[in-house]
Length: 144
Image (cartoon, rainbow, N blue to C red; front, side, top):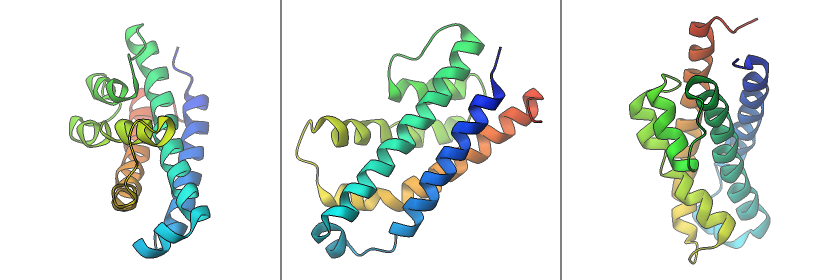
């Protein structure tokens, strides 16, 4: 059974991360590059956005299909298959899993410009994610 309370708690966390990221979004590229604390905070917030949304995706997918997603990327694609989010949003969010992996695992040298450019996109797309998941919960009748 879908645990709507769990999903809502995670949505609240997402909204908090988005609020923090918005507060940091006005930094210039030069400030981003030179301020280690701000750079790491932004990286961590992007990581948390991806991981928390993927947790929501996994919970819903397990409840709807009985199968967990293979990875973060797939969790977004499959989330659209069950109507959690639109396919357009899923396709635009799925690549953020790759950025998350580069941040966490340092697979390659992380280019400051790439992370910096993703700030506004992350804010816009994950704000939309929150809206679409809330609409999914309402449609399922899982709102208190």
